[in-house]
Length: 167
Image (cartoon, rainbow, N blue to C red; front, side, top):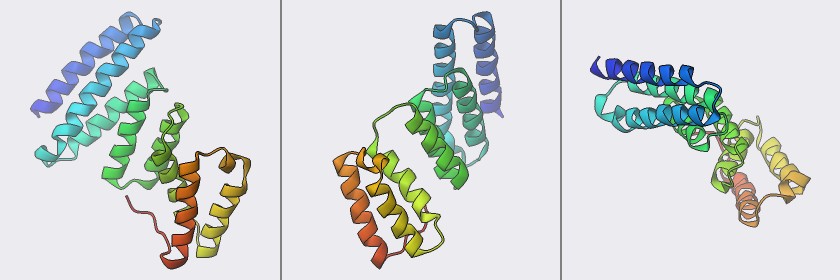
């Protein structure tokens, strides 16, 4: 309950700040950063509190931060983490897409997104065809060498260990 009051107080102050200068991009970025810092604090202490309430509040803060600044890579990365903790596959994919959409150069996130999408194919043949199609496509050729190599290794491993999506 004390955390909820503290969070609501922070949100009120931050919301008043945002309303006072909603036109100014710098103010929006500052408010967004405040939401992100608060969400990070909640994520940090959520395990000790043994409750889902801090995760829900952190999610709401990250949503608010992303409304103000949709290109904030750290907020998207934190959304990925929240989705993983919750086991929410759809939110995980959306957060990875949002994160990569900010323009970050993160092969690990790209691989996780590709792996997730391939794992959702119904058959091993469909999974293998999708990896092959990707590697031969223009988009696949644009991937970094290490990521292409990782995808090729992934395709090889599919033959021995069919993949399923798990966080």
